[in-house]
Amino acid sequence: MAKLHVDEIFDGITELPAGNFEGCAFTNCSFTGADFSGVSFEDCRFSDCDLSNVRLAETAMKPVWLANCKLIGLHFDDCGGFLFAIHCTGCQLELSTFRERDLRRSTFLNSQLIEVDFTGADLQEVAFENCDLNRSTFERTDLRKADFSTARNYQLSPEDNRLRGAKFSSDGLAGLLTDYGIVVEG
Image (cartoon, rainbow, N blue to C red; front, side, top):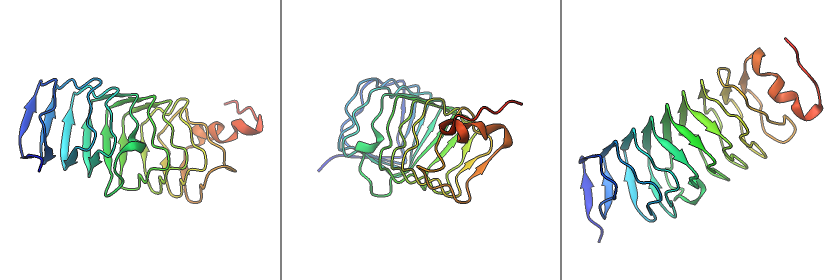
């Protein structure tokens, strides 16, 4: 049976201790390229950490808070699905995937979500508050009641995604019209 770390604080480490984690905090850690496969993180917080290219096969994130973290090349679609939720604030999230992932319990705030793949994801009622979604992919994505009103640089097809009740600012409407070849000037 794996060791359970409860309410521990890890500061500046580069190697994840063996076991599972509940209520733990990770600060200023660099886990670039680490293997988190099969590890469970429950109610854990990562602040100012680099998790780029971490392997996430069957990793449990229920939920995980990420603040000011570097998250490049992550396959969140490989994580375990039960109670999956992440909350990103001020993060650099790039070249990552959430394909077919249920993200209804997740939040994205003041983050860069560059070239993130949300194909087939369930993003109902998710808010992208002050997020840059440049080159992110939304195909067959459930965006009902999602909030893009303060998001920028998104492009998505109204015909290829479920959008009923989604919120957009007038400044972002061009991102909905790209597929139609319509140029919005303003």
